[in-house]
Structure formats: C-alpha cells, structure tokens
Length: 208
Image (cartoon, helix red, strand yellow):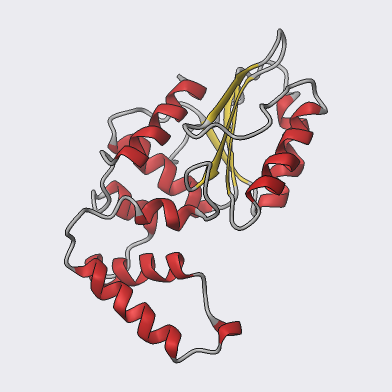
C-alpha cells in the first residue's frame, strides 16, 4: 500500500523519497490520514521547475512545497516566489516562520511552502529531525561524539553534512539503521515536539 494516495486535487512536492517517507509517517503518527498525493521530484531544482505546471493543473485545490533551505534560504525563497508569481500567485517577501500558506484567487490552488528545517534557518531535513530526538536520549551524545571523531580523521573536502551524519549515526545505534521515515513511524522521534507540531499544523492548513 503506498504511503500517499494518488490525488490530483491535493499535491505535495518534495525533493526525494526520504522527505516523502518522513512526512507521511509523521502525519500518520500524529493520527492523521494522508489524503494528499506526494510527488518526489528528485532534487530541489526539479521541484522548483515543476511549480508552474503543477499550479495550473485543472481542479487542483491545494499545492504544497517542501524543500531544504540548505545555505541558500533567501535564494531558494526567491526562486519559488518567482515560479508562483508567473501563474498569478503572490507569496510574501519572506517565508512565514510557521510555514507559509496563501489562498490564491479563483481557479488557483491554495499554496503552502515550507523551507526545511524551520523556514528561518539554513539547513535540511536532518536538521528538522535532530530537533525531534527525544530529550535526554542516551545514544544521541554518543552519536555526536562519534561524528566528531570521524570528522577529525577526514579531510574537509570529504566531510558529509554534519546533521545528516549525526542522524544516521544515531539511528544506527538506536534501531540498527532503519530508514528515517520508518523510524519516525515506529516512534523513535518525538512527533509531539513543538517543531513537529508546527509543521503538522502547516500541513493541515494546506491540505485540511
């Protein structure tokens, strides 16, 4: 059974399968039925390039976009804003900290945009999940120490992104390395954390 149904009326655009699985499992873990479609485009540029056509799909009620801010939050926001503007949907000058939602005019979908991790900071999906590690978890500081030691032995050009390395090291010690989405579904992350609750409220506003 797919994580998300095929739903042409309500669609969430994401970068990759990790994003799709984390979001759907988090939504289900909070007790909501995933009633919107999810399209993993492959990378952030493909998400942005698809916005214009996806916003024009006849009968579309809601269109959500979730991408990593990385180190280019302002550029990312401007690129997304430009694509929506081309079809007559105006986003605010800056992303809203609780997730941006715009109710467009007649014949246009409700639009939502979330820049991982929190619409304000540079970062990615793994930064978001780092905030959902249960407080006081005994393995988390061990995973961070392991990453510190590993990075000390690597040349700078070979270093992976730290949050990504920490999350995967933590999952390896916590549950044998289950994928991030499945780990969310099995309750290893705190879906009641304020960061998660803000994101869930945004999803409900876009698709509810």
